[in-house]
Image (tube, rainbow, N blue to C red):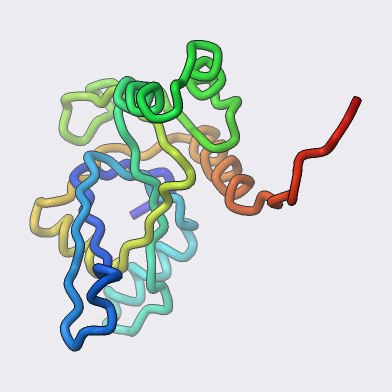
Length: 177
């Protein structure tokens, strides 16, 4: 796994909050068509090497951002927040700090040879999945590696995601006349 790698068929598992205190809590599953890894390459590589050597890994979670075809993200935002044309232009040009879009992947760069549409992400939707689960999903064919963002696009995604995660919430907006 690499930072900026696009995976298809990602399954995220969490505990049902209503059953968390029970002896056997229930799992909730959510499937994503795509997710992009935002964890650091050095952590991912060390985890892989530790697992290959039979050592315990300190990496407990691989951070990912679910991604949707940009047309689906736009339709969802239009329905939920009444997104207008001007707001969508800011999002698709990566000028809105909460969202990030990447252009379509041509067939020749896609591991499955079919290509991918332009994808959109909402940084609020960041998820974490234990590496062992991801490796098992990949081994079983449930999750598939599709392509890896090239430099400088992976660095752009990483820096924008990091900026969003480290923003400071102000109690109220500045008042400027």
